[in-house]
Image (tube, rainbow, N blue to C red):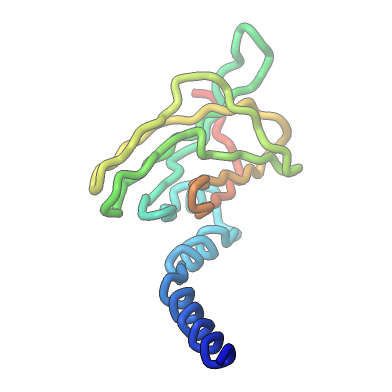
Length: 163
């Protein structure tokens, strides 16, 4: 009697878990494509558009700013643009960026007026993120959605000097 009851229960559990499972094939394929680092010129790599959870994100340019008077820190400005191609509102936020130098050390965020907005479906925005430069290029810029862990990565070979 127990075998007759247990076997159908396991079959039902297997069907339910299989049906409710997250295929996530789109997310995995986008992430792996995004993380491929190619040996291209700086301009080609910087202007490459990548998707994170339905938001097309493009790193437009990376510039060094003039020295800050209060400190001797070199500040870099990363200009990026995002367009929400999904049906749900999505964040476009400089706090979701992580920048690492050639030694793999994460750069500190410089407190300034950085972008942080919610994009409605079909809308786009452009803004800046500021970091304290320590070390040398190439820089690795990663935009990661903390909820889904989906991310896109850009390699910045050179940083433009202050204008």
